Length: 311
Image 1 (cartoon, one colour):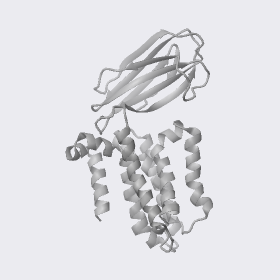
Image 2 (cartoon, rainbow, N blue to C red; image 1 turned 90 degrees about the horizontal axis):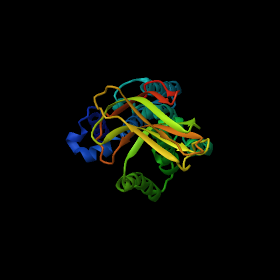
Image 3 (cartoon, rainbow, N blue to C red; image 1 turned 30 degrees about the vertical axis):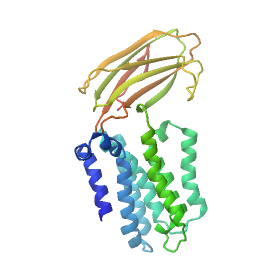
């Protein structure tokens, strides 16, 4: 019960915005950014330990597992559509992952290799092919869970779901050590800012540009909002393409009200496209908690690029 109580306590402190008062701002920042993982661990562990064995072999097993999975998916999708504070909305990724993982773990073991290798393999392929765009970007935490959890349960530590499975103690300890140490190393090596946001490639061939946008923010210390334009000399905004000119517009208010920001200037010859990014920037020491950027009515010259409230 200490495990469940600890996870529930950390999650509650994050949602109530009390974690920094307990752990200090610097440590709370790193821990507070992983609320999706704490929720998923809490729910999935309880399902495996308490619910799965009680349903096994019963007529209600699959109707119950599928119904719970659908409910989790509905909650996740609903959270995406809401305007709740970001600390609540971000939990959509945990609920969406749980909607898939609960039926997955309910299945009797051993699974065929097509399923046990296929599920994380397909998700990993989508991540590699799509990259930092669209659904993969918006559901990054879900993708990580759908890759790592099946690997852990069906390839490394199979005894969790199959009591008679033979596993390697060395492999198990190496796996769990890697899950702990790799994120710690990346955090320690992390330099500069972390950026979340939305990116759109727009065809553009004019000799100069004029950007206008409405931006509103409510930010904790170490966070900022910005609009970035990367003008390039090819028609497709492929990652790694040399940027011919970069323009950045930022807002100055931090009271939740909209203000108009802009940027304008001449362009080098040969420009064919612009990558327009709406960004929420977190400095390496940014304080955890609610920080929101709202972007609306993005105009690039006479063309409307974005005409809705985007948080």
